[in-house]
Length: 126
Image (cartoon, rainbow, N blue to C red; front, top):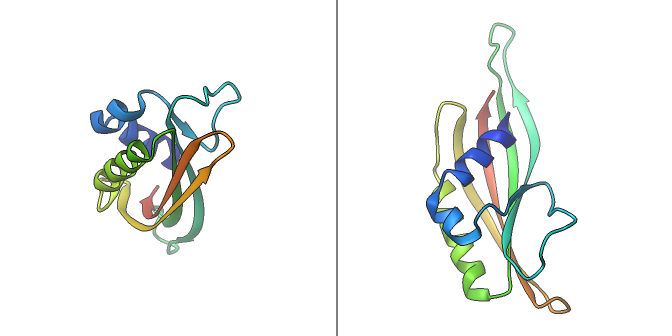
């Protein structure tokens, strides 16, 4: 499953875990998330799938957004840089190709949080 594989890539990187620890979440932050800490959330959407009648291994195209949250703009930038370096061009047996396409910064002034989103296109062979 693509979500599990992405999670393993992220948690298997000491560069990522040095910055966010175990605060790597799929789909949304947990209800009990400590707003004073940092973390990342990844969201994957399936865009399309292509296969032939005699091909059981369909290639799928997915879009993945990873959102970095921190109280410091420098830390958010560091997280995004590490993620882009780790994932841009990444390829293995099933995650065939990952390419970054877009980075979008925002700020939650009420909670003094900095948020930055990076978007990737993924070719996945299930």
